[in-house]
Length: 532
Image 1 (tube, rainbow, N blue to C red):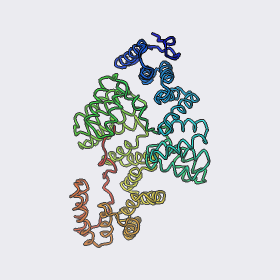
Image 2 (image 1 turned 90 degrees about the vertical axis):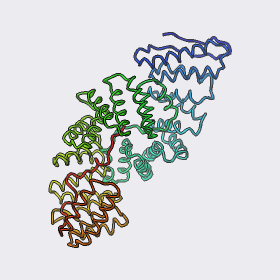
Image 3 (image 1 turned 120 degrees about the horizontal axis):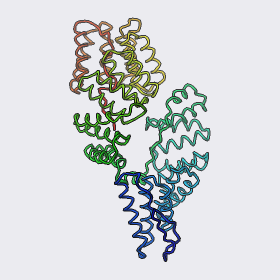
């Protein structure tokens, strides 16, 4: 390794030596970047006329490419030199703090973040990171004002709200903790790491029934921090990973074609048969799908499947099988769809969307018992998932268990009184249950009038028509059914139009509907697209 030392240079403070590490373990493009930054630094050092701020930038930029490549030990003296040469540039203590954080050196990270915050007191990312460090060390009193200041700057940021929630838990202010953590989960239902502190807050309030559902939902998932500097570093390298990150950013801006180009470049750089390669191929396939190129999408998803490992958790493989399952369903090949969706939940057992789609597809091939298990698993993973609970109820009816379906929906309406989907489903079941002991059309109409007033949807209209038909008022049922059928035709709801037309014929023949939902009526597939 070639060392650079500039301690003896005139007008320059004493600086630490830096080196060019062994770069053989990184991609060729990254090797070139590291060497180019090292050469630029060498030239800046050798030119005695280089202003100190420019020299600081040369050190810092070399440190950035080293840190992005995970050469942390070599990057550290670069940042320290940059900070020595230019004490007013917030970047160098900030990147140094993140480097220390990545190495688990908490005290050093806290000191560097504190210096960065002195330079920019209202930097949101620094406030969050420093607040988290203090919380992790039990320094609640130090963390609270940091998150409070962050909240004043960005009250809708989940990482900030979650920080205040954790502070409240630590202070045993459980009402405030519940308020903040529930708010964070409303904004981002995927913030699964918040379920553990929320369960603790409910336990602190003595509300064990509310704590229990959250205990099983916890996942060790980091909450994203709005961090432009870290994003700059993530996008720095000419590597498969950096192009994946660029493509994801283009996805967020709904620039499908731009994302496609980034993913193509990433695929060209990534080594085959790696997790990164599979992830890039899947994302490229999703970009094809979103531009309407099903053949191109299928080719990319099948590439992922060809590279799949025989066992183990692999998110990209799971998503590729999921996407292929959706394509097969779209083409009417439900058996193939079942196979792909089974593989999706194998490679990612907590993939809620895959469990739901798998349940839908199993119902389409009349395997109701297996479908029931998929909806049950989805509801276990995410008790807040309305499609999971609704799919479970619909499948119970298909299995001839209308009483169990009624009890399941009644329990759901009591547990989640704000979720009108459950109230609507209960009314539908009461209006048209095949089991005479469950069917209660008068109660169905009462629920619609009392709890669903103003919900003028085709779904509610169908339910009301079913209830009137069950009461023998077929003229009323026919009039309402014609109205919802016209609305569905106008909206282009083809599967719904077919179902509604069949029910209209029943009413015209003076027959009630005894099937609240078609056995193969999808819960999620009709509205599902692959995700990147």
